[in-house]
Image 1 (cartoon, helix red, strand yellow):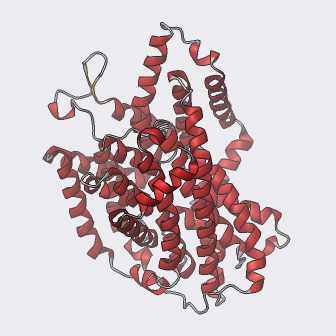
Image 2 (tube, rainbow, N blue to C red; image 1 turned 90 degrees about the vertical axis):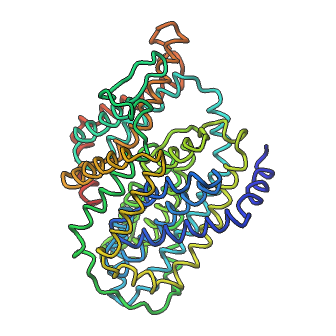
Image 3 (cartoon, rainbow, N blue to C red; image 1 turned 180 degrees about the vertical axis):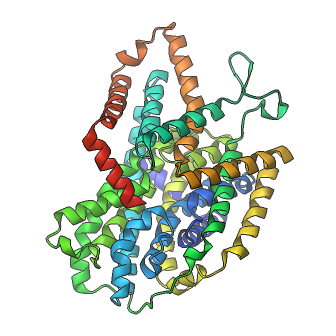
Length: 501
C-alpha cells in the first residue's frame, strides 16, 4: 500500500464518530494530566489500560496516544503560569516561561509554547508517514539475531539515560527481566518463579505491574506533596506574539523540532532528553545567552517544540519494530498485545487501518490541542487548585476496578497494591522505574529471539557477529557501555540529570 492510499485509509478510520470522539477524549485527558503535577501520562495510561480492552484496538490506541502527546501541551501551561511543571519534559520551560509570566508576557509565552508544539507535532506526524513504511520494510529483513541485538541496545540505552545512579538503573532493569520471566516456560513447560501459586502460571500481567508502580505508587507519593501545589496563577493578557517574538522563536522552533524528531526515534531517549537538548543548543548558539533564564522566548519555544516532536516520533520504533523506546511506549505495546495485535514490521500489511488511522488522528489531535490550550488557559490554571484529597480516592477506585476487571481476580488487586508500595519506595529512594518496565517487556522478547537465533545456528553464537546489522548494533551498545567509564561522559550525564531534577 502506497503512502497516499494509506493516508486515505487513515482518514476514513480517524474520522469515524467513535475514533474522533475518543481522540478528543484522549487529548482532553492528556491536557488535564499534563496540567496536574504528579499525575503524568504513564500513570494515567496504566490506570486506563483495563478500560480500553472493551474498545476496538484502533480506538483504544488513538485515545491512549492522545493522552500521551496531549500531556506535553498541558505540562507547559502550569510551568509558565505557576512555575510548576505538570510534566518532567516541561521542567526546562519553567526557566524562561515563568520569568516571561512575571514580566507580564504570560500570554506570549503560552502562545509560543502552543505554536511550537503544534508545528513540531505536525512535522513529527509527517516524519512518521515518510519513515515508518521504510523502516518497516527494512525490518522485514531482520532475523532473530538482529532483533536480539536491537533489544540489547534498547535496554542499555534506557539504563544509561535513566535518572539516578547507573548501578540502580542496572538493578531496576535486572528486576524487570526477572519479573518478565515469571510464569510457564513456553519451550519446556516448566514453571518459573511462581512460588507454587497457580495464579502466576500465566505470568505476571504487565498491566498490574505498571498500574501499581505508576498509578498507585504516584498516588501515595503525591499525598506527601500536596502542599507543593499551592501557587498563585499569573494573570494572562494578550495571547498574540509580537513581530519580534515571531522573529526570535521561528528558528528555535525549527531546530527544536529537528532535535525532537531525531531523539524521539532513539530507544530510551524520550521527550525529556529532547527538551533539555533543544534548550542547551539554543543557549549555546544564541547571541544573547545572558537572557536565558530571565525570560527568553527561545527558551520556551525550542524545548516545547522538541518534546512534542519526540512524543510523535517515539511511536515509530514501537509500531514498526515492536520495540518500546520509553515506558509509555511499553504501555502502548501492552495495550496492543492484550488485544491480540503484535506490533512489528507486519503491522502495516496486517493492520493498515490501525497504523494509518493512528497517524492521521495525531494530526487531528494536535489541531484539537491548539484550540483546547489557548482559549481555555484559565480553566486549566484553575484545575491545579483542586485539593488532591478530593482526587486520590477516585483514582484509587478506578485503579482497583480496572485491575480487577482484567481477570476478575482479587489476587491481581493484591499484587497491584504490592507494586504500588514498591512504586512509592522507588519514588522515595530516587530509583527510576522506567528501565524496570522496559525490561519487563523486552526481557522475554530478548529470551525468545536469543533462543531462536541459537536454534537456527545450531548453537553457534557467532551468528550475532556475522550479520552486519547485528554486529553494528552490538558495537554501538558496547561503545555506550564503555562510555560509562569515561569521566567526561559521566560528568555530562550527571550535570544533565541534575538540571532535569
